Image (cartoon, rainbow, N blue to C red; front, side):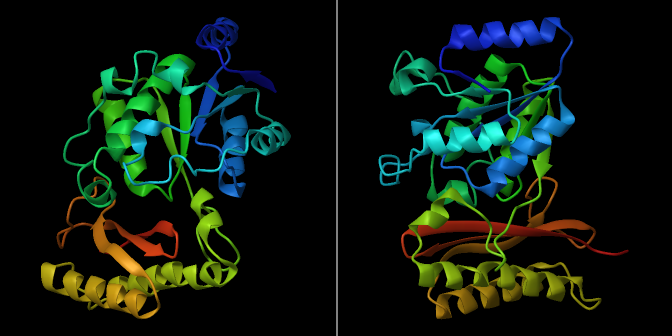
Length: 289
């Protein structure tokens, strides 16, 4: 596996592979990798000739009071995991490399509407930071395919939308969430949980599954009253069990719009604070008929 931190060197390596007719699959990450990231790397190796990844803790997607400074940097361990997964190139740029004119002067990619709700409501500017850095990585790597975990469902929707609207010729693939045995979605921020909190955190996925079962029942109506009742009940349950829920909601899977009775492909999304960790998860479902 080649470790690169220079823009010029990265462009040259990608150019060489492209000239040989090889396809490229990209996995953007912020490091502190877990099995979910490694799964993305393995999938990248399956779908393209050259599997590439980036590790960059992107400051523009962190809010003023978030964990930018304390976010774990584990490059050596991350490199070993990616090399074992068969990765060909790992790009590890500095902040100065990615934002040579400084953060305040950086041009931005904004995805209106979709970026301001759900996680975007409590993390203003977060998805603009994500869209900007991912679009820059798309330009640098020129990938044929890019892979992202479905745990970050709203992020995946934001990326799919700007990639389509800005005409990036890239196939965006969502990879199913990798979970602990308890059902807890793997996340770099799970490391902020105590052992007791980590065990309790599995209740999030259990709550999602129960809500899915209710929605899939023949008598459930996808309408404002029933959706509000179901989501309110789920939030109360999480609160009673020590969580601080930010949202628990049912949306249309295609674009995260509020669903109507005729929508069949749906997603339930949740964000909740537990101890020092902000946890997100989701579950998709298809309604019959």
